[in-house]
Image 1 (cartoon, rainbow, N blue to C red):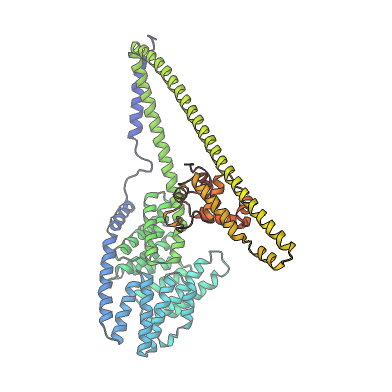
Image 2: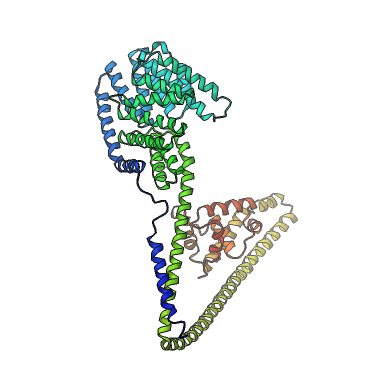
Length: 560
């Protein structure tokens, strides 16, 4: 013992130093912040102010809607309504749809086919944004491009191109119909280009989209690059262009540039309160693939909020898939962190045990006294345990005695009730027999029939039930209140003033007496087995407790 003591402090100090070293290690995945991280920080800061941007856009839309309602019917009102629709188009599907319907009604009211067709085009646009392909294609087929102006024709053919492009994307990369849908999309883009002025945003955007659909990624990249360099580009246009260019860069094998562009597009979407967007959704997937689960989880939640707010059903389905993947991975990380904490707790516990061991060596004499106290304590605990066992045994005996007393009392009451009821029925049968013999001897057959008709089985059964109810409630005066306590407050049984028990209470009263066979209960009460099951099931559905607990709780109702 004396030779091991000097080694103990050295080992203790080494363990403490190792523990401190583990605590000071940097967290996994730590790295110096780069341009992408700074952009992510900027996006997170913008997301914290998202509610302010949403409120600003709602205030702007409110001004337009008030002006629209105040404007008298005419072309000016239609133009103002179109502005309201454009504001809602990327913000909230339901409101955009409602204003598209108002515009169509206004065009019909003005008797202007061109305005009506323009409103129909708006309806098709909003249906496509919400992922309602069937409705969008039906509206597109019903449109008459000849009635549209040049800008609306461009919008119409671009809408058709988007529709076929989206169908091609849904028909997976090796899908049979994908080439045909892509070809139709390109043809519609060619038609839309005829109505664009070269060098404009719309012209370059259509060319870039066309090159993308044709698989000419370098040309598409160059065209979208020109778009980003255009002067006077709005934040919404920038977001669309940057998001599309991000996809192109990803296809060209430039993931870092792709994610930076996508972050910038997401920032622009948040600042313009655009909820019909895929930037945040795609960005969460990027972050997930690069192992940044914290940002991935944050962005997918904001993307879910946007999709739900906009009511984009298709986007909600898309987001649901990646959300479940990210959530499961996040749970895995939390589990690993929990295991790490367990390891640290174990190390801390080991150190604590070492300290305790060191204290034991310093206070050996005190330990001897503690052992003596521990022995006395164990003896006391054993005595207490024995006393507790005796107490438990006495309680069980008391419970058994109570049960026997209760059973004996129930038996005595019901034996008396049975003998009395049987005696009364024998007297009734004897009186009936005597009267029947008398009428038969005197051949008074009409009297015989009258005696038979005087038998009222329903009344006899009701009297039997009433006698049973009186005896049962004498034994269990609190039965109805205790039974109602097992039901939800709005489902409790209310009896009439002249009613002791109803059918439901009577069925469970028999169960309380130990008659739990449904066929036997049915014979006693004059019901079929299926009727008994129906009553029992209906009551259990109204219970505060699970179905399997209900009957044991009824059986536990105490005798008075």
